[in-house]
Amino acid sequence: CARRWFDEGDLGHLENLGKYVSTMVAAGARIAYARYPTTLWLAIVVITSTLVTTYQIYWDLVKDWGLLNPRSKNPWLRDELILKRKTFYYVAI
Picture (cartoon, rainbow, N blue to C red):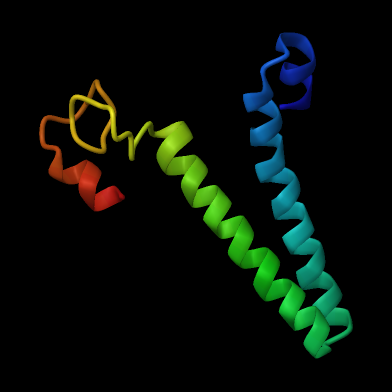
């Protein structure tokens, strides 16, 4: 992601890099909590894990799958659908 941002200058690649870096931060917090099981580290684990999970779900649905698009000709889906039944997309959301 960093190389592509460097090469292309598209900030979307930095946003994608943020997804991976935030995952490493959450994993690091989990490791720290395993070594030092205090309430503070538990709170950090819960907060970072919640933020990372939310960020990754958003990225998968909106950026990777193109879903949750209010301006699409298919309400809340992407314009071009591969599957014939829209139900599969709504279940995925």
